[in-house]
Length: 85
Image (cartoon, rainbow, N blue to C red):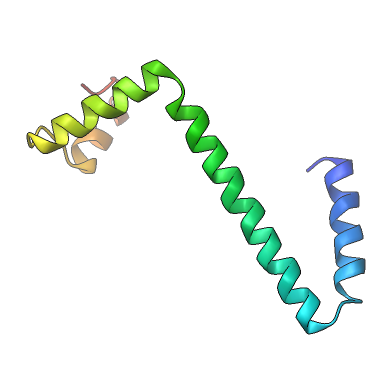
């Protein structure tokens, strides 16, 4: 955790301790909104990569065809040091 992050958290704790329950609820709602937006932006960034989008589409097609592997198979194979295909 960086020093600046620590300072921001300290500021938030100080201010939060002085807010009414109604305002605390608004702060929590806004924080959840920001977190959701950050997740959405990360998703959009991944989907805007043509290679990533193609890999996702290929994976979805493989899943529709039943061309899947259990996580145990994949884990076992990767524990042996190989890439799974």
